[in-house]
Length: 316
Image 1 (cartoon, helix red, strand yellow):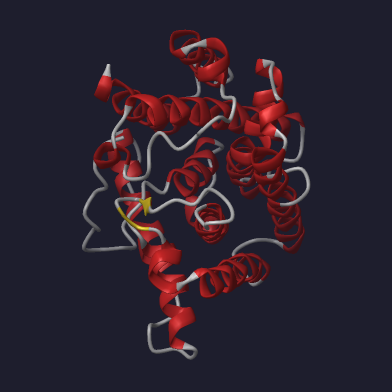
Image 2 (cartoon, helix red, strand yellow):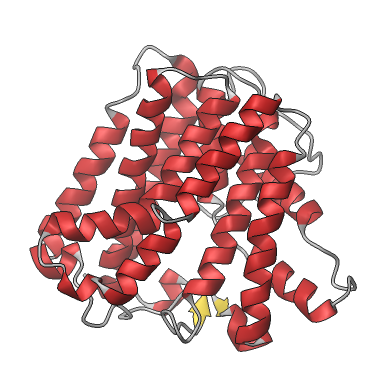
């Protein structure tokens, strides 16, 4: 994906009807950054060390992929993306917390994230754990207090987000990655870990975006599957980048998978990339080609795929 756009002077600006995909994505990105800035505590809020740790994790430069997917999905279903901005930012809060935890010495022991030292290198393991707990709890609180959404929608979104984090989501995926991944020898076993560690939150993004738009039927399940396909592809492209990219390009540690089995180690780089490509093809195949409002979401999937592939190409 291209470089993050500079924040628009008018943060409440909205793309004109019929605007280009770039215009939609740039405006949505500006709104996400502004709202995240509002959600982050001030550095002077007591206890200051905790507040600074939360800000460091939440506001570090990122692509905001998950939040953008949420807004673009709401837009795809002809609803106002502004109604999805709070749950979209809540998802970014959960993601920021998960990265801070994943990077800890007892987890992946990473030293670099988004081109900067990992949070625990700056604030210590203890404060980072507490800041991650704060981020996740505040994420649920923001959704619960979101007056722009009906109560039933808020309850459903909290449910989707909870499932994406818990025993069928991020937490389970990380546990499997740490303690059972070495036992995986088949591609489907590896993808089960990927589905929980990465796919679950992607699926939550697209499902939440659709729910904000009022969907309650089988189309909601379709968007859940769409997000899962993106998440599985994203994780495999990321594993390929771990082998083929460098720290400057990736913005994080590389060659960090150790002896963990991945699709790359089981199938080889070329076949693993083909598997990821097939996930993207399946995701894109779920769109109605006659639905013009889908263009920004489709364009974003292409941007994301192209950016991930560029990371893979660095050392090839």
